[in-house]
Each structure stands twice: as C-alpha cells, then as structure tokens.
Length: 358
Picture 1 (cartoon, rainbow, N blue to C red):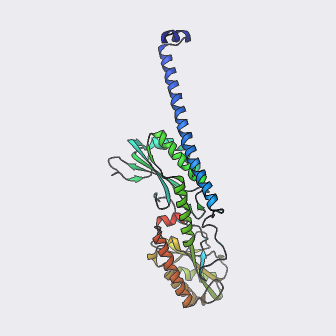
Picture 2: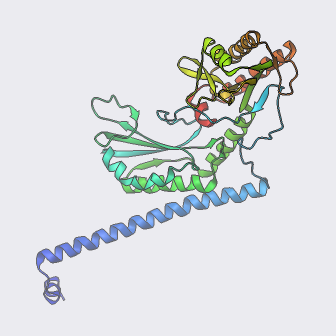
Picture 3: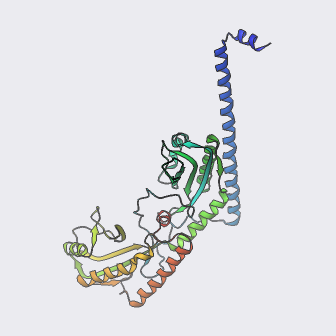
C-alpha cells in the first residue's frame, strides 16, 4: 500500500496529512528530550547517593554546620558565637566561585534572555527561606554591553550562562539532595537550550561545602563590650549621649547602630525604650566588618567614653572589670581570626563573607 492509498483510506487531504506528520515528529522530539532529562537526573542522583554512602561509612555523624554553636562556649571573656542575623541586603551580590557551585552553559549561537527565562520559569520553587541561595548571570554580547556578566534581561543577547548555588551559610552546608536537584535542573536546561555544559561533580562540591562550613565555624565570632553603670542610666540621658557619640537609633527604637562609610560596623543589644538602663552591650560581628575599619578599637573607645560620661565601667560577660590584659588578649585573637579569614579566601567584610555568614 503506497502513501496516496493510505491517505485516501484515512480520508486525509495533503495538508491534513502533513500536519499529522509534523505533530508526530514533535511528539518524538519531546519523548527524546524527556528521556535525556531523566538520564541526567538519574546520573546526578546516583552520584549524590554514592557520595552520601561513602560519607556514612567514613563519618557516622554529619555536622549541622556553624549555625549550631555551643551556647556556653566562649573563646575569651568578651567573645561569643555569632547570634545576630546579617543585616546586609543580598541584592547586587555576584556569583563567587569561592562560596558557590558554579555551572557554565555555552551557546553555539547567542541566545536572547527571554528564551532563557522562559525555560527557567519553573525554578521559582528553589527560592524558599529554607533553601540555599542561587543566582543566574549571563555574558551579554550586545554591541553596547562590552561583553559583561550580569543579571538576565529579556531583550539582551547572551553567549554564556552561569548558574550558581551557595554551598554554605549559617544554616550549615548545602544538602546532598538540594545540590543534586540544582545540578539536574542545570543539565536539563543545557539540553533544552542546546548548550555545552561545564559542571563540577556533586561529590566535589559537597566536600567544598563541608570545608567552607568548617572554616566558617572557626571564624563566626561575635565580640561584645559591656558598659555596666554604677546606677541605672535614665533613658533620656543615654539616648542623648548615644546621639552625641554618633550612634543612630534603629527603626525598632530598641537598638543603636554605629556607622562608618554609611554602613553599621557595630550595634547595641536590645534595650527597653523609656526604661532606665543598667548595662549597655555593644556587639561586633567580626566576619562582616573589614579589618581596615579597626572596628574593635573604635567600639572599645566608644565604650570607654560612654562609661566615663555616664559613670560606668567596662566588664566582661561575668561582670568582672575588663582589664588591659584581657583587652590585649582579645586583640591577639582578633589578629588570628582576621588572618584565618584572609587565608581562606573570604576576607572579613567582603561580599563573600556577607553571604557566607548569613
């Protein structure tokens, strides 16, 4: 039976038959794409399961990360494990290989941002408060862009795409399933867009996440200075004194921030507005402030000035007077902690540190 006889039997015109053939080809293409995606997903999950099985054999316990400190442990009388949330706005941070798993997609021909965004519309479910932060940047090849990396714009054209997910934070290292899911999505996107993909192995990135978490645990320090007043300081007097010293009352009306270069470098603990204050505590989150700011020395100076003006004294967390020996010991610890962060490639006050210690 030839083709013309088959068309006659089915009662199809030339146009109807052509449309049917095109529809069949589309179904076959979709089926092939689904098979490739399933293979990519299985490969990533298998790699993750192999890694997890190996970790179970090597290490019966898996640290929950540097977000689970021992509340009673202190390095020095005025050191604490960091407990305050990071106040920095995360908008504007760029992909950073030091703390991110970076996957690169390269296109044989430039592709528009709208085409990429259309295929990534389902990625919104990754952006939950409990999930690791992920980012996407494209290499813009438009004539007026000078081939710069930046956020995707629908009307721009790109030759490469970078997908990145953060490997660790104060919640701990990224999980096996979360990382493998991200890698699987990247592989599927590369298949859909016909791009070459450059992706590190899941096991390598999980090891890097563990190392980042361990490094951060050693450096996630909150330094405090306590001003204990001989007699409770009236709120109006303290408020006036803090304003004179350059502190700014927060929007909540419960804390004071000390700014340098338009950014807070240390703050007070919560106070009860309108009530007399018996003790004022100033807090510095070491990893978030650059060494060049000399934040500890400035915080120490402010503490001494406030104590002198309001009849108080500097004490440690046990209420014992803060001696020069203790202060010198703190300085030595600070130098070591700053050096540790510098050696790790995540200097204090850098954008990478702001993201890692968040």
